[in-house]
Structure formats: structure tokens, C-alpha cells
Image (cartoon, rainbow, N blue to C red):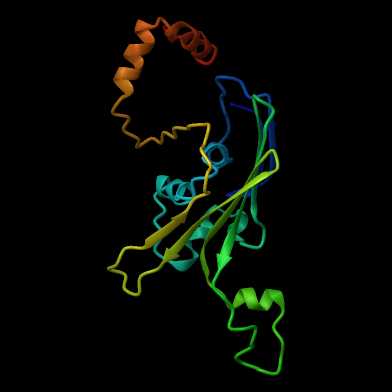
Length: 217
């Protein structure tokens, strides 16, 4: 689907560009080098209008949202000041851009509680606010869509966090993506493999896999 991908300020990735994607792509690298983060960035770019994915990718890693600050997990160096930017060009040469930035609680009318006579700067206002969600700004060939994920955090740890998802109106995603983790249980996997066998479509896959491991038959 995508011919290239640009990632900025996502997880441990500061600035990365990948070109030349094909039907089958292999990422190699040491542990904690960013391979999973690249897959997550692709997953978020494919489902750019689905704000719930920003919670799901954390859940895949076993990171459960229990604190106000837990959206920080997906930002570079856990720093909200630098929005996440994902950009891809698909096979139809359509430019897809996604910016993810925090939603802050409303400031107290710009008043400095400790010193009412002193004006607050933009940075000090932010420091007094809590992050209550994420805003996703999607642009496809410069046509813009906005979605949000907002959170009602529980007063008691016994209560579950309530998410409020807002998706773009009159927008239908053209692409679909499946993200499989080591703990994924694909119930339909056997049927999918059987269909590949019936359609005699296994040979191209095996040929590609043999380039990785010649012992594959």
C-alpha cells in the first residue's frame, strides 16, 4: 500500500524515513532498536482515522492506561512538546499525513494562582494542565480530517478508565491493517492458509521466505 514512510517523534524514533516498500518487507535489528515502533507507526498510519489505535498499541505492549500521563508512552522521550508526525505516500501517489498531539485541560482563565498579578506564559499554562486525550489531524492530499480520543479518568483505582472516541464525519478508510503480536490468536489463520493452498498462492510466499531461510520447504 505504501511506497515510503516518514516517522517523527514516535516512541524511540526521532526522525526516520524508509523508502522502497514492497509486498513483503523484512525488518532486521537488535532488540530495542525500533523495529516494533516502525510496525506500530505503519499500523497507526493505515488506521489514521481510528483514534482507539493509540490506546491499542500500548495495550499490545502490556502498557495499561491507569494514570493521566499514560498517553506519554507513544511520544519521543515521553515529551508532549513535540507532536508525532507520520507521513506516507501510497501506491496511488496519495500523500497521507498524520499529526498526533495532546489535548490539555482548560487553563484557569490564564490566571497564575500562586501570583495573580503575574501573567502566565504559554509554557507555564501547559505545565499547570493535565493531558486529557489526543487529537489526530489527518490530511490526505491536503484534505483534512480530525479525530480525538479523550479520557475520563476514575477517581478510584477500582474504576475503569472511560474513553471517548470522536471520528471524522463522512470519511471511510480505504485500507485495512492487521497487527499481529506474539500473543495474538488469529482464529481464522487456518482458513486463510487453506485458501492460499486452494488458490495455489503459496509459492510466491515460500520463494520469498527461502531468501531468509533456505531450509523452508
